[in-house]
Image (cartoon, rainbow, N blue to C red):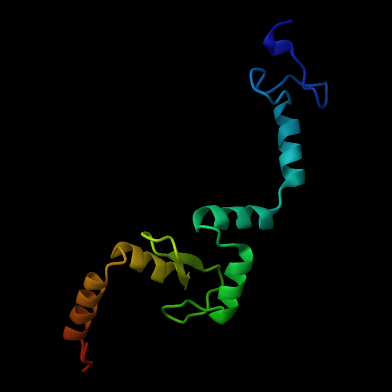
Length: 132
């Protein structure tokens, strides 16, 4: 029997999707099991922990509550989720930001000098009288 005739060990009806791998199931069985076992909360928690040095879903929820559900920079309430802002050097989480504030901070590479220059530029070209 060649590899293309090997049947799925789960359903024993369809050919195996990947006969040379450790998984000897057909694509339909693989998809069924993935869908049945998918837990979005577990996936979210794993992604947070892996991307933000141990930061968990509980940490996110606590920080969101501490920020009253609003962006840490602009204070706007977002219908969507807030992004986890972190220091790219240390990996420490700083707060939760809306998409616009997160993108703005990313565009200036978290550089306080550029941020001050932007503030100076905006104030210089506005009617507001404010000191930096």
